Each structure stands twice: as C-alpha cells, then as structure tokens.
Amino acid sequence: MAGQNAVKRFKMHVKAGDTVQVISGRDKGKVGEVLTAIPKKSQIIVKGVNIRTRHVKPQRDGETGQIVTEEAPIHSSNVMLYSEKQKVASRVGYTFTEEGKKVRVLKKTGEVID
View 1 (cartoon, rainbow, N blue to C red):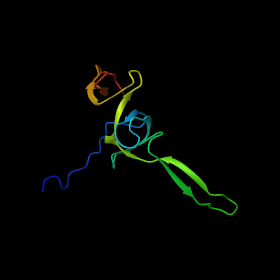
View 2 (cartoon, rainbow, N blue to C red):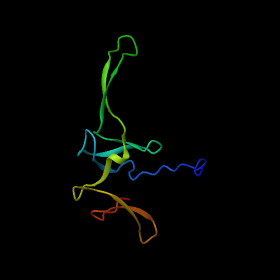
View 3 (cartoon, rainbow, N blue to C red):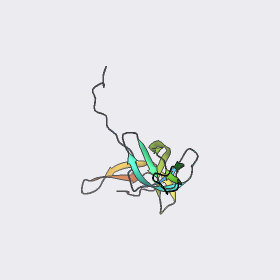
View 4 (cartoon, rainbow, N blue to C red):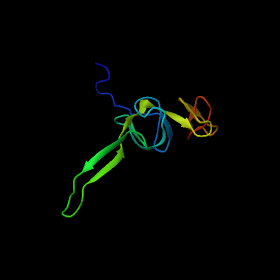
C-alpha cells in the first residue's frame, strides 16, 4: 500500500496569535484570537470560544472547591481568518514577497498576514 510509511505533515492555515472567526458550531460568528495551535490533532484554542466549565475538588484541608471555566479546543476547519481592518472573514492564500519570503494573504482583501 502506498503511503503506509509516509511521514505525516501537519499543516494548518491558522497559527497562534491569528484573529479568527468561527464559521460553524454553537459559537458561530464569534471572533477571537488563537491562543494555542495543536497541529497533530488539527485543533486550536480560541479566546472566548467553546467555553467549558470544570468543577475542581479541594486538594488540601481547609481549601474550598472551585468552578473553573476554560476554553476547549475546536477543529481548525471550523474557523476562517478574520481581517480587523475590513471586518470580514476570508480564506487564506499564499504568495511570495519581493525578498522571496512566503507569506499568507487574505483572499478577499489582499491583506498580508505574516
């Protein structure tokens, strides 16, 4: 079978620090910053999106329990890069600068991200 011993490449169109808009799911339409990228699972953690509540038991005597809210990962295919200037979500393309550096570009606006 072809590809059995092939090396897996994990490439995503978003990176940590990007501003994205959620395009599907319960949080559809929300805009936030990517806090963490998990390329092996093709997932990302976005600030203020997919909030989960966890009940934490007290660890020591005299300590009280807590309710902790935190962002859970979502799949990278459920987000699009977002332009703060134009207030629009767009697909991403790749192009080269005059210096020969490969950069990401928003298809709708032509805005260079990197």
